[in-house]
Structure formats: structure tokens, C-alpha cells
Amino acid sequence: MTRLHRTTHSEHETESFAAEIARQVTPPLVLLLEGELGAGKTAFVRGFVRALPGGEGVVVQSPTFALARSYPTTPPVHHLDLYRLADARGLEELGLMELLRDQGAFSLVEWPRDLALPGPVGCVRIVTAGEDADRREIAVELPDAGDA
Ligand SMILES: Nc1ncnc2c1ncn2[C@@H]1O[C@H](COP(=O)(O)OP(=O)(O)OP(=O)(O)O)[C@@H](O)[C@H]1O
Ligand SMILES: [Mg+2]
Image (cartoon, rainbow, N blue to C red; front, side, top):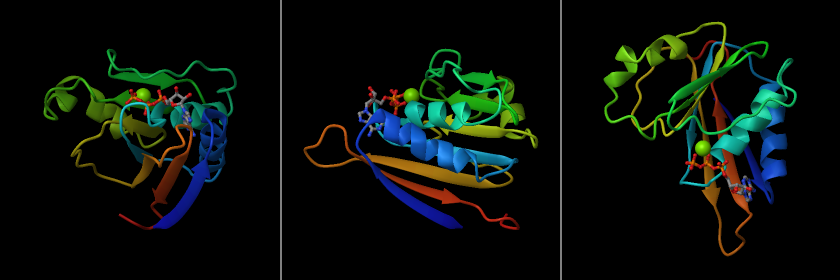
């Protein structure tokens, strides 16, 4: 595991940190995004997507109702938001597992809950800190090549 940490003070700084991460990872990779409502999970995905070729200016919003959206970047990014998914078993029926198994893509998952996944999985934990409403502590764990 590679562990990275950043304190950010704006949405833009969170996007920039995500962009740095996007430039140092390769598929297949699933990134689980943890953090309360409004923590900045979608902001992280936006920075990640926009740092990839083809992602400049792409609109990235929580796919809360759609559950998933794929961006035509290189490599592609599947953005999942499982907040409204009642039951993890529904993942297979809705075709979401297929996205998560895509070996040629990144999958970034908001509200992953207790997803059990094959293949390389990393995580991003975003914590709001103290009285500063714009401050976030972001901890990223990335699997190393060869990790299960
Ligand atoms: N340091 C920061 N990093 C990220 N977002 C920040 C920061 N400071 C303030 N914000 C604000 O926090 C909000 C983060 O919203 P975002 O949609 O990314 O959260 P989310 O974790 O995806 O929430 P949800 O669980 O509802 O999908 C935005 O309004 C953003 O402007
Ligand atoms: Mg979101």
C-alpha cells in the first residue's frame, strides 16, 4: 500500500490533489470514496477525471439517481454513487459489477459501504476537520503493483 495525505482548504485544492493521484495510477483500479455528505467525494472525482486525457472540462456530478456514469477519458472512469442503492446484491442485476470489473478502466465509488471486490482496490477518506468549514483531511491508500 502507498499512503498519501493532504490537507486541503478549498474544493479546488481537493481537485488538484485528486489530479495528482490520477497521474500516478493505472487500471485496473477501484477507488472507494469515504466521507460524509458534502465531504468532497464528488470534487475528488472531478479533479481525477479532468486530469486524464479527454477529461478537460467534463461535468462531474454525483450520479445519485443514475447510480453510475462513465466518462470518455483515457483510460475511462466509471463513477458510481451507491447512496440510493438499497441492497449490495442489486449491483450485479443493475450491471454495476460489470463496471467495477472493467480491467481497462478506473472505478471511483461514492458510498461504497461494504462492497467486496476482486482486484486492486484503494481508498480515499475525506474528513471535515474542526471549525474551519473548508478544511478537509484526505487520506489515500493505493494498492502497489502486485498487491491483491
Ligand atoms: N477542501 C474542500 N474540498 C472539497 N470540497 C470542499 C472543500 N471546502 C469546501 N468544500 C465544499 O464542500 C462541498 C463538497 O461537495 P461534494 O459534492 O464534492 O461532496 P460529496 O462528498 O460528493 O457529497 P455527497 O455524499 O452528497 O455526494 C462543495 O460544496 C465544496 O465547495
Ligand atoms: Mg457526491
